[in-house]
Length: 308
Length: 304
Image 1 (cartoon, rainbow over the protein chains, first blue to last red):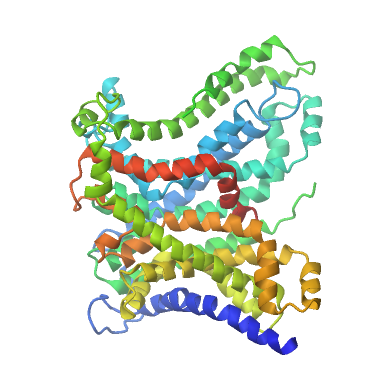
Image 2: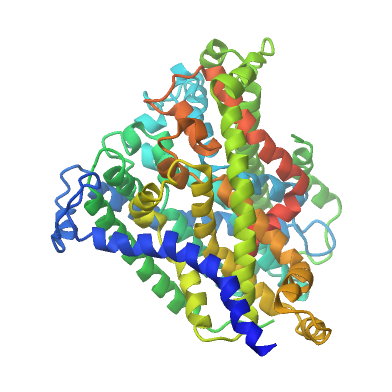
């Protein structure tokens, strides 16, 4: 039996590991190498130029890189906060917010709300982008919000929300929030369901209001889940490519008001930038950011957990 | 879509006053204002999810001119030709078939290879076990954008660019980190007694895996399959880059994006709405039927 084991392990690992190394590990390693070259990606030859790409990207002749990092940074700061606050609020309402009935439970129709709120999560981002493009359009092409504002006699962006430099990024973040809240609501709901009922009952007998119950019981007991959610949302925030690619004019416009870093990398590698070296260098910087975020979040999540 | 539960929710403050609770507290007074506000917000958010979906479905039956002049109107006639236009002329039928073909290969491959790797990593001790596991898990942290260009070149060099098989291989490789991470934890949690008994009965390693361990791991396999189906169905950046030169072989997500792209085909607005409705419908139906399993499958990863 013993001599069969080594062969068995090898035979089971060969394909998965081989495929993973070939299509994931090696391309990542090559990206680090390409980031040190001046390769356009199309020419047969290239030279090693050291860290020039990493210096040059900040002079930003195309006007992509600095807006890209700025907007991705804004999304990284804003998105997790909004989504976590909203989904915690909804989860609390749907699990322990209802007080009219005897026991501790959610508001009426809680099950229905959970089903509805989660739905955007299963839609392809491409479809979400199309739907919201339509919603944001100017009234002349049947935009939902602008037509409503026009009908009410209120001001609206003339070229639609995606055609307006001051609205476009907000519009993109709103779509990201819209599509993620349901997932974190369900996630926090399962964490809240694990909190024993008697804690809430005791709080109620002591006369604690719902707001107080939330901040003194629910939030501290959920802290670990909140931190996990923060990490996941941070990763989502670093993407945003599909929405920007499909919804905004010239894929990051108007006037670079919605460039995000994923889109910038794509444009350098495949979309007219013709600079694979630069694309890889920006990718390496992005990787560095992810690494720092992961290390920081791992440090923070290593707090004591409350057992109950 | 059922709107029925909503009125019930807004009525709640009334029913509360009819039967006051014995343990009334000071917090409950301020609670009433909060209550109305909270419920209003819950209803508003539900409307924000439901209304766009209803809007898309209603408009998919309307001619373009009507949609543009009155985006909120109801169909004056049912324009079924929008759907045939989307399915045939806008090529969504073809994209749909392509996506299914790729997913049949990629999800099967992901589950098989993922389960094999996870099983030996979870259940066998050998040199390098920990390193291989960490190698897989580290992949969850790599931003795919960094690898795009080298990956494109790799696929081009071996002639797998613009092929469904090539795309499926890439999906499998990029689904490995999470699948292995999740399933390793799952295989570790299974009891050892059954496996030992099977070994004593003379089952070999292969037989043990396929006949005993895989069936035991079924709940975990179902969750992660749902997770991978949805994740790979939604893939955008990989097919955009790796199927770019094969427009007829493109998958649904990227195919849809061409309907709205500036350089792409100028599609009739009614057809565009029909296309969105068609792309949304299978997902909507699957979600309504299996929402419990889908929610469990998709949040399973985060809960581990």
